[in-house]
Length: 195
Image (cartoon, rainbow, N blue to C red; front, side, top):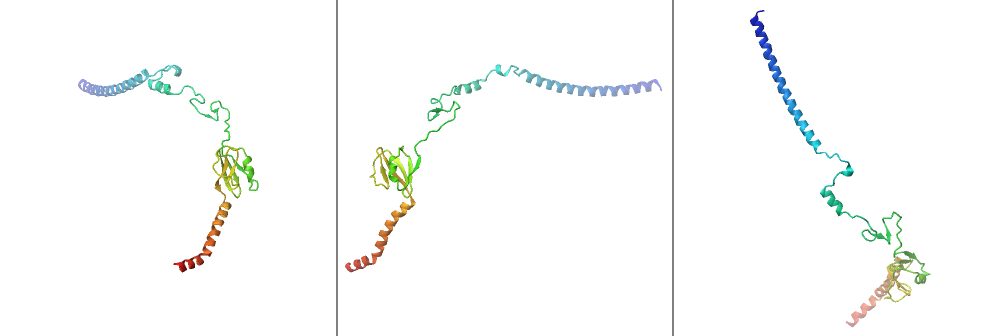
């Protein structure tokens, strides 16, 4: 091999090597750029982290405003309701006291004993064959021992008649109607005779 051919071969190899190194330098520069970008993001993000404990972290203005608007202490009967005067905050079982509207029943034969009850306004009593009675603390109706029972402090008034009472009332009306229809031909004949 001649010196010229050896130098030519070496030059070709060196040129290829320089080109390969240049390609590697481009790849390396790209990797360094990418690494720096990632490092900048990580560094920037970590610089904003507050490493204090939760108990010592500051509260934002918005959070503090919301907290200030909250009720500080619940007080029964003042800023929270009670039930029958009993606080719902003490954890004790709540007892709801009976209000008016208790429902009693008195037999028809003993209906007069309804006057002996100790009712409250709007208490109810059922008397079979008569219906549902409500107690009022006024005396506006006459006591008839069927639709109104008067006491010293008020009256039991029939609110919802029983079906058999309605049927009895209707039978009276029906008997009048039957009598009227039965006599209609006589009345009509008398009407024609006089007109």
